[in-house]
Image (cartoon, helix red, strand yellow):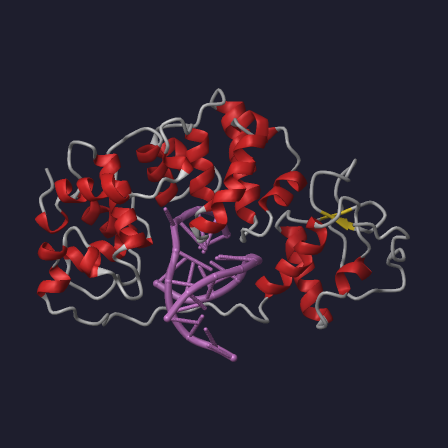
Length: 321
DNA sequence: GACCCGTGGCC
DNA sequence: TGGCCAAGGGT
């Protein structure tokens, strides 16, 4: 039984049954691995961009052990432009851990999930709930906003506070069908109780919503920091990686130099990509996605100022692709 | 807790 | 046009 009737379980479950999107990772035949892949891809990335890639991934790598055998470069290429490619590397590492240490079965225990790379407080509980039907607080940005409004009567959620957010949601979870309720809470935030222009006329809990009762006050918390993108290292790293995604053969540094005019920033970004393991340098000084062209150890050699001694081969003759 | 990490679509 | 937003995680 939920203690707070502002998000009544019966209403929410009924609404969810009627209007929930038919997403592939919600289908009964979807494996726990499919759920895990979806949750990683959906981190900070909209459903519409994830769906086609998710289908490709599950067809190509239907189990953790299947993905574990793939190279990092293949995984990064398949990730495409979903963004935050470190997620792909961590998912690949998680697949190897699951294949090697968990009998190729995605763990169902929250603490075991938390120990895997790329799986944090949200994703661990999302997998436990959506793949294994467990009752545990699944708190994402949608849920935080729904609770802030419907329960606390605020215009929006304040800064995240994992412990408090989870306590809030824990108190709402019904004993029966808690996992479906968790999905419904997220769906409500995604489709109705949206950040901008919420569709309150379509809301199943409109008449018990504390925000309505409060006269729909505006958000009064601290301003949310909006990240810049244009001109940042994130943009430059993305441009560099995009070159390497488009080739199978390692590329000369000159091929990377053309994507950004500021040489200092360019080299800093290339170096950080090497440090992050998203790029590797071959023995002849060219650059490639990791795990495909490095027979020996990967030298994280200087990529800074083109000094006299640096090996910088000319443009590949066949700039195929 | 602050800051960093991609990418694209929408109003 | 550009700020804002999108199922976060790691350091």
